Length: 469
Image 1 (cartoon, rainbow, N blue to C red):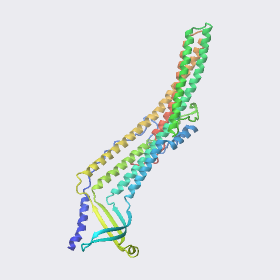
Image 2 (image 1 turned 45 degrees about the vertical axis):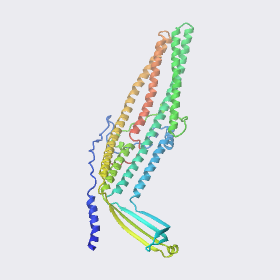
Image 3 (image 1 turned 30 degrees about the vertical axis):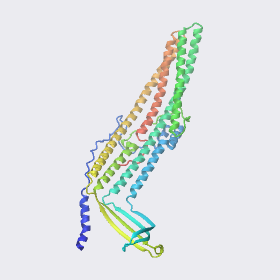
Image 4 (image 1 turned 120 degrees about the vertical axis):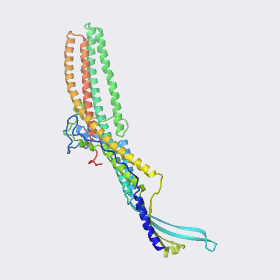
């Protein structure tokens, strides 16, 4: 009988390692199709290293009010607080996953009283006083627990990147909103100045009508033009009011006024740096998040696959026990036990294989999402660069158009006042110049907002050194 007892552990281990070769089958990951371009379509720079974006990129606009607003938004925005709470949640999940790789130790103690049947067939009432310490440890032979910890760590880093992405988006939204507000302020100033000019033209047309120099039609046309200019003011005031409230809410406050800094005419878009490398796109938080999601999915796949492999667990317990409390304190009976166990599933109806297939599909999804995220980042950066170039070209044409319209108005006004032309010529020239002035302010605002969009597309310097997937 002794050889049979000695052969039992050997057979158990042989069975365990034989079963270890029955892990779930995993399909190969998809073939990567992502290729980084050598340079941008606009021909600005090439894919080289060494050029960085300002971490606090909004300071490049050199507006103290804008800098203070973005700082307030990043500190008090409600969505950012939610994102930071999610980071804390995933940090705790990582700690819980790491704790599974550590041994556990527990202590139990307490008195007991029971009525039981004695060997002589009579009932017996007895007391039991005991205290025991238990320890257990799972040997991570196949790395399943390490894979779960790795997946939790990657998910934690992905959530950090999500918080960075939220901060980048909210900072860009605040900057764009402030620049749009200054653009509306400039349009309101232009509308008020135009209204004064229209009032002067209306009064002149009225006096000329009263003395019989012009017809009532020209006076009514001047009056209608004045009213059209007056109509623009409350509309712009409403837009300014709503924009201020939106920025106040974004900063985590109640609706209210927003402090202004430099006027629109003094706000200059930062220059597009020469030699923008494609590697700057690796600084985008959403790309970092997609990378870490791939890492997490791959580690989760490994942990799921290893569920079919045997698990090894060691347990130990020691304690004292006595039927009398005085003996329990002075000379109790010492008890102990040691155990080692191995367990592995023999048949589960294909559950683990199905879970493995699901985890593999999730890994493939993460890879596809990563590739799509990078392509989207490339397109957004290309669009941002192109928008700045085209808006500058449009601004040059607008300046020429504005100069022409101003000269046209000067000539039309002189001709009308000297009696060589009707008021319709001056009225048409006024409309053309006002339209050019409004478009000029809008183009300047859009150019500033396009600079913000480019910083957003480039990641804004929010994430740290890129992490290879």
